[in-house]
Image (cartoon, rainbow, N blue to C red; front, side, top):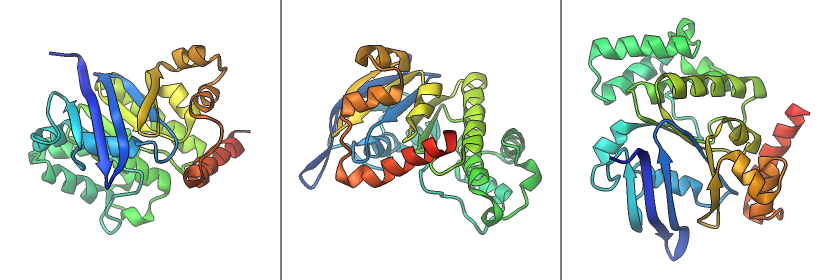
Amino acid sequence: MSDNIIEVRDLVKDFDGFRAVNDVSFTVPARRIFSFLGPNGAGKTTSIKILTTMLHPTSGVVRVNGFDPVTQQNEVRHSFGIVFQDPSLDDELTAYENMEFHGVLYGMDKATRRARIKELLDFMELWDRKDNLVKEFSGGMKRRLEIARGLLHHPKILFMDEPTLGLDPQTRNHIWGYIRNLNKTEGITVFFTTHYIEEAEHVSDTVAIMDHGRIITHGSPDELKRQTGASSLEEAFLKLTGSAIREEEASSTDRARQRYHRMHH
């Protein structure tokens, strides 16, 4: 049995003649933190959607926790938790009800479910707000609740697509503190995309840089800096993807980066 919890070989995804993912291969060892970087339109979100059973590949081989996302969807879905870029909580329910609903959906028995909800809401410092409606929560509280919900059924992998976009630096640091702790204590594999390159540099064991549907390179942040002669991962990223921002992604990538620098300088 391979120690790789995610295996992708020769993955291709076409949409009406457009190749969004172009012959991508990579592996993610279990219990690691793996980040996917790249401009908008690079193919990151499409790849995550294939790994999480939301899209079928055009061709290629994908295994998540040893299962095929096309033919073994249930087994794959029980193997991961996911935190989307856009909030997916029910605002009209309480924090506890959101967790309870998710646990029932995953077929967890009541005693296990309730113990795990208490443990995770405590861990995320939300237990005292468990009976509050989610619509009363701040952005950071909602994101912590989404992560707690994603972890409820003891998944082996946590997928996160832009998990901290738009959150203030303190909240982002808190959330990464929780996730790194979980990675250590529960041995959970973390697979995430982010526009905040400094974030990827600080938390990732491995970074894969994707552009135009292909993985240009991957390695530890230090390896990528050595490979490009860069002093930071952001500099390495710009050397590898080109510093000219493409029209369609200029807005979100630039806004995220400007916001980051405004808050940190």
